[in-house]
Image 1 (spheres, rainbow, N blue to C red):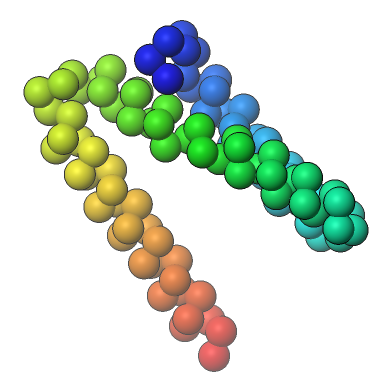
Image 2 (image 1 turned 180 degrees about the vertical axis):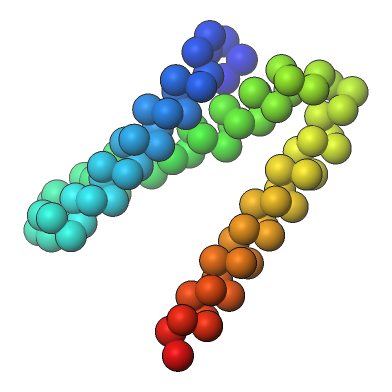
Length: 92
């Protein structure tokens, strides 16, 4: 990821690809379209984490990267927990 010059564009494209591949499942629920979209979406999705890490490293530098990465992870888990709780509460 360090060699990529336009990291924000990479994340934007990856997010767009993941979104489109998720829409394929309800719009074209045949085996091959779902299988191919799952593969393409997974390949695009795995670029997001390392790209975010590279951006964070570039923003804060190596000395403060561990603290920043910890903050990013804690906010991710907080959001994940909040969404899970909201789903649990609205499902009943």
